[in-house]
Image (cartoon, rainbow, N blue to C red; front, side, top):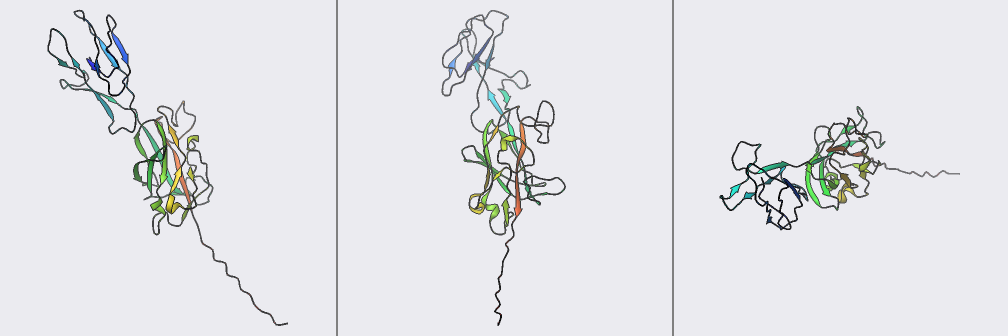
Length: 257
């Protein structure tokens, strides 16, 4: 039982046995359940919205029950053996990935058995507005992923440092591909070409992540990103080709008449 919660005002339940309330920030008031008849129980359910990127995998909640004829009692999670412990609610989070590759034939698609993943590439995760969130490095055939994400818009960036002299993508340029990462097509290049990647990096357009709607390889999904999880989108890929400098030398010879 939760005796206290974040509500805009006290809520009297009377004979009702459940209450659904919103959780506005900076407002904590008691829930008045009135006189509880002998042998009866009351359940108070709290619906909360978590805003921003979570720093943990669950939300902890605990209340204190007070009354006129007993000492205050701290609520306890009945699903755990320890006494007086808070209720932990797991967060439903999402994952985005998945590959940075060398596109050997320049067709904008990762061809299995022909193209190769590029390891050691620094990949950044940004908000939909372009603010830095976190960074990772490709491995295991050019693979990368960012997990523990809340629903929302994100941008994936191939960091500019990858294109510096002697860096892993020195001598590479982004291949022309399909720009929309929300098309959920796996293995196609989603990088937006930039003439100065060593200064600006290569970014995707924003991808929108929504729980229980991401591509998967089982019904009812219509798009396939290679796994059965509807909370992962593993279709955001980046393809690169090596460029070659060609020197053209012209030679003029004089011919005597």
